[in-house]
Image 1: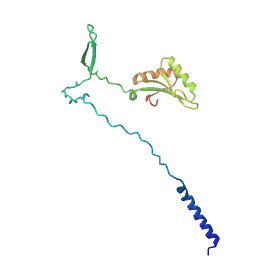
Image 2: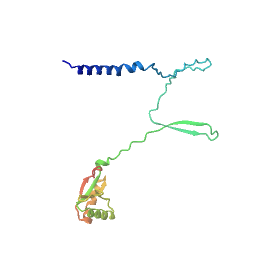
Image 3: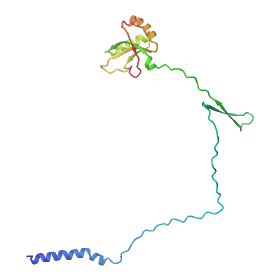
Image 4: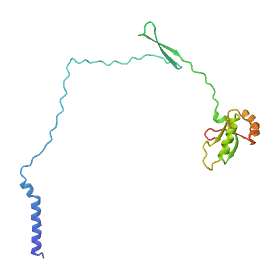
Amino acid sequence: MSSPFQRRLVGTIILVAIGVIVLPDLFDGKKKHYQEEFASIPIKPELSKDVEQFEIQEPIDFDAELPGEPVEVTIESSKTEPEKEILSIVEKKQPEKVEKIDYAKSAWIIQLGVFRNADNATNLALKLRKQGFQAHTFPKEPKKGDLVRVAVGPDVSKPDLEKQLPKLKEITGLNGQLLKFTPLNP
């Protein structure tokens, strides 16, 4: 079944494998084992009895009361003895609360008109400023094709702005409209 050539080939392969695996170990000789040298950690030195030792004390609990209101601390140095400083504590009174007007909810403007031509709107605003009115254009820097609003104000007094409506109509010929002013979206 198997020819003599096949037997010889298998025998040759086995001999070559043994030669490659076993023979290098036989002829290698003594192997050197390399071991890294480690530095040893020195032993903790003994402490001499001359070293000072401190005792930790318990904290002292003082019954102190804090003032109800804020306190102002001032440091004064005496003129006769510049090395001494005098520490004085003065109770500071809180300022009375002043009612603040919520301008975001109570401010008013007069809208005179909405213009497609930004130059006309800025010219009208300049004319009104020369007459002493607080005139503005929205948006401040319009892009091409944007609508521009001209408004007078804002003012917290609605009656003051209502008094200005006839004078504005006389100057511009436009019927102004009284609107609430919202600072985030003028």
